Amino acid sequence: DPGEFRELVTSAGVEPVSTVTGSRKQPSPRFFVGEGKLEEIRDAVAANEADVVLFNHALSPRQERNIEHELKCRVLDRTGVILDIFAQRARTHEGKLQVELAQLEHMSTRLVRGWTHLETQLETDRRLLRERIKSIHKRLEKVRRQRNQGRRARQRADIPTVSLVGYTNAGKSTLFNRITTSSVYAADQLFATLDPTLRRLELPDVGPVVMADTVGFIRHLPHKLVEAFRATLEETTQATLLLHIIDSHDPRREENIEQVEEVLAEIGADDIPMLQVFNKIDLLENFTPRVERNEEGIPVRAWVSAVTGEGLDGLFDAIVERVAEDVVHHFVLLGPADGKLRALLHEAGSVISEEYRDTGDTVVEVRLQNR
Image (cartoon, rainbow, N blue to C red; front, side, top):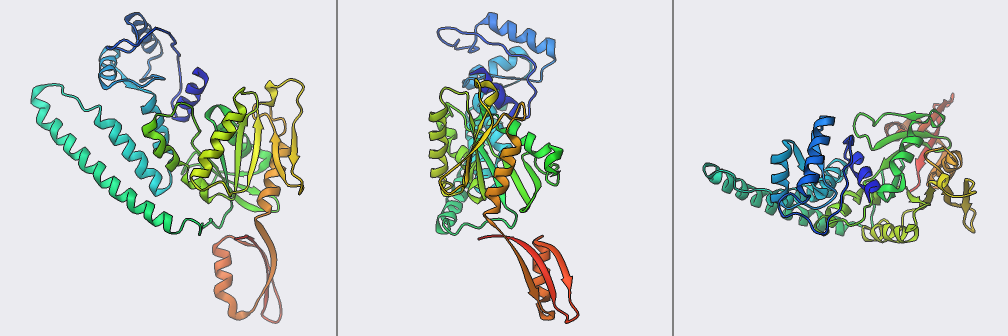
């Protein structure tokens, strides 16, 4: 699917300047593509002054090296692109270790003999890679033991987190950008310089909330990258609310929903409150935006278009309502001896207002996450 690959490429922070497609009965052992197609790619590289050529297929180390030699620029195959995205998105300790492991194992197949005087260096590189891989395996085992011991005692952050999950081509990042940059929603770009996939919002009746855009689910994920993919999603187990973004126009919609929910169950995130967001309603015939509620009156589905903006106000209200379930709003009377507690509330950013009384007491209005 060229559309999905284009989404993958932009997720990696690369600007696509030209797309070359082709078909042949079987890949060329030397260049994967035929020589005529290679010439077409070479022309596209020259015309656009491209820095890198990305293939939506797995390349053998030999094919990758041959193509680089012919095009005189860096070449990455599909696995390399996916690994690059994982490396950018992994935030948990286990996620970073798992992605580094996958990168090193991928790199180890790319170490090939060039000139004889470099063979000693090559053997040194191989030995260092093997040692590093062995070390990461040990550290991962330790991290997993620690996590399994305390998995059910999930620690949530003081600030509620809304985490977006969904297939790469569901319009997840477009929706993330629409919600977090619209002036209507008073976005606070606190985290913008730290991580383009984290934003802090100020929600009415809730207060500060962190919105996180996770790595997109993709089809035909190379088997050796499955663990790295799950590890990059581990942080969703800390979320207050999951927004499951779904391409409402995709004929495989139901299958996609099932696959996402299966992975969430595998990483222990299936008990987190979820709001399904059916995106791209502008591609459906005679469809109006709406929010659907369950028997208890809780919003569970929103139908929107990230491109046209239809339904976004309703979605935003639904997010506020769902996150507010997890937030308590109280007035607390603190005496002169409660200075330490007052300082902790301020440190957590939970104090909305304070009123001092002649008695020396203070009435503090607080907003806290319900644990």
